[in-house]
Length: 299
Image (cartoon, rainbow, N blue to C red; front, top):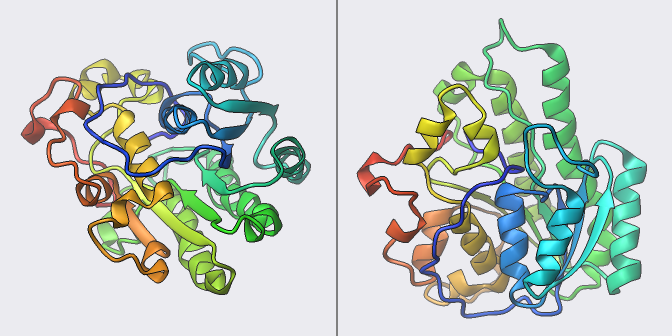
């Protein structure tokens, strides 16, 4: 039930970084709020350059934040930002964002596929416009942004594509509960699976990241009963710390240093942070005891 584009609170982090993203350039889809913004702000504290491609050029009626306010927060946190109003569904917008990143910062080191649409309706009830929206943003948008950034990633020397999508769990219950959404999210994960294999010889790492628990976002809060639901959630900072660990390789310090081990993975936030040395996840909670947290879907 995670939505990658929405705002949430940020608990104190127990994660101590073993690496830095200083001077690295991240091109992110979405990022005006929520998990995407939390990831961007964590990278900004290192001094990273962040290019945000998002539709929110103007304030939303119910969701706080625009791509411009996000850029302001990134720069206040110590990073460099480039805000681009555009739609990941439009080829020319994505191409323009890639070109802007290269022109403004000299290249692209990380593509972060954060933009995602969600509709948990069953097949009887899902509107086909919503079906098309999820396919266009989640699957096509992830594929397109990754594809157009490949020339720049190849020259990075340490390129990385990180997608916020779940492990490919073929337990039929997930397709049975919300087939349209499951196909869209698994399409993102299939992109990770295929690109990791395809790009091995290019030295580009390709991975996915997914939360073990519900994450507090404005989209969840705006759902019926959402204010109560998020009390059993974690803040988006846990995903920001996990993404930082993956992108800096901090999660590999206690495992394998082999570059082959750093690609083609479907990580969870807890898995990554444990490998990076975090043993207590309570600081990420919004107040609920660990046993009361709501597990996320697909796990």
